Length: 249
Image (cartoon, rainbow, N blue to C red; front, top):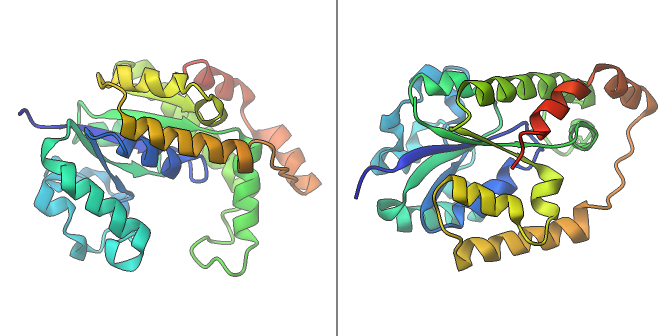
């Protein structure tokens, strides 16, 4: 069997990166980490192919992630599933909430990227809620609705540039379109792009996430303080959003 290709799932935090990672990683031929090498996001030249060798990938003593199997059952179960199929998959990779596609291509010139984007009002509301939650020490107070707008604009610009540079290596999905479609048309297009067949495992994972989207997310009210809503109206780049979502699968 030939060596697996590298696949990254990227998007702004609170844009659905974990959920789409869960769906894709349910496929028997895809194995993905959960921000496995977060500690290298500021120095991506160190994110080399050698880190995706089996022995290295599952050595969590490196201190490069805070989402370790020994810290939570969810991650323990996830990595157990990835390890069980690692030697027979066609894609290995990671999910990231930093959009640095061109920098990653320096070490992984043929890596593929699934980029998920989400409406800025939904993302900003999530950032606002977490920033003001005193019981959430993992989320900085500075990561508020206004910073979400800035990061969204930057991320969308990088995704658009990557699509123009290597359209064969970048796929874009839009959050509500992907999870809200009961037929999973966007997922099927992603699988076709990856040259993978739908399987019962990934179909089941998608059906579960779609049901959760319909019941808990699709109609959820997301009010923002008026000053933040005004800030979004003034500073969110709607033209850039349109450019990127027009590329979505």
